[in-house]
Length: 464
Image (cartoon, rainbow, N blue to C red; front, side, top):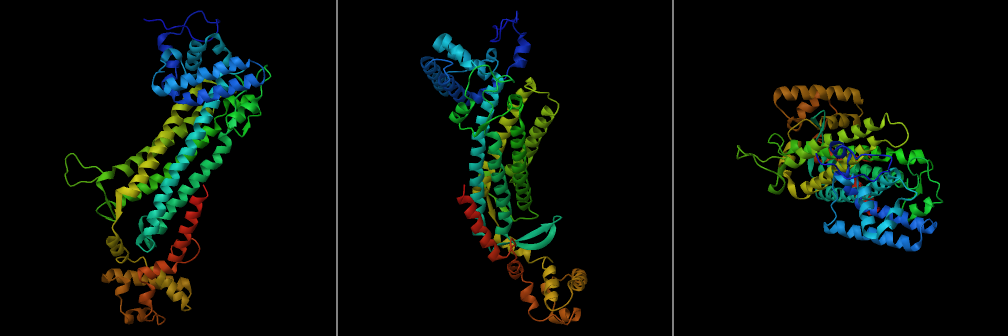
């Protein structure tokens, strides 16, 4: 069995790790994704060491130049550390020393891998949150564009998955816009807790060197620094909070996915799927499958699992840093990649992959009893107590169902036999277009309200 090379830690150890344990212990296979952030953090740390006269300006310049050389090597694909490096931090330090000699060994002065990895992860997550926010904005813009095209397109509304009341399709789509707006705002608020620097907390207790933590934080764009070094190196609340925010994004995408899957079925036939966003069956040639929303719905559980994993990982950890925290990275990396991929896929699906079947939607809202509430409201406006009107209309629906008639098919004589308050205007009152238009309370599905919602949505997009 091949003996691995000695590790970077002190001469306290007489032998190297067992090869299997070295492999088990290593994180370089996934934390290499942090390399750009590790280099940026290290450059700031080196500049701080120069400012505080812990190293000379010449040494600082050599370190920063060496780090930039590593950055270019990595971007060209020339820097590919293996498991012997253990993690991205040792890999960078070892390569830096190869490039500039013993001066490279001074970079780790007044710093631990504990505060270093915490800094890297926060820099990574800060950038990824901004990227997700940008992708959410594109998703929202797509929803808004669809809504603007379908203000007066009607769609059945459901409660308990039973026909309830007709809606403006735009109103339905804007509900998802508002969900995404909360997602965007939640991420914006989270940045305040991500953007705190642990750099300078050391392993757990700070350092004896006269460092300037605020200066390093300013160089990295952090708003403030941790006030407690123990908390600084062991805090992963921000990662859990991100996983929670990501889970809510996936909840909202999954709900829309479920509706798209239903709407694309023969039973609903509210939308058709374009070839660019659907697949066929290997055995049934007539099939066109809604793979995109099905995958989004499926991947939602994956993100939930990462949230649960992070919570369980943290719940029993004593202060301060523990190796368990190495497990946060794969969960966060995969959550980021999954959420970004799903937001992008749903944006493409909405913009290019589905078409609403407006004639079918029109037919759907004309073939049910979802205007029954409007009959009760009609009687209430004529002075009949609402609960009495409600009971009357319930009987009307029951007898109409038995007779195979829709409410609009009842004659005026039949209406007046139910209650003398009915007049010719009942037919206009229960027409689907009027039923939707009349619901003009703030936030309702009435067309005037939908136009106001569209204006608010455009304003929200313009604000950030």
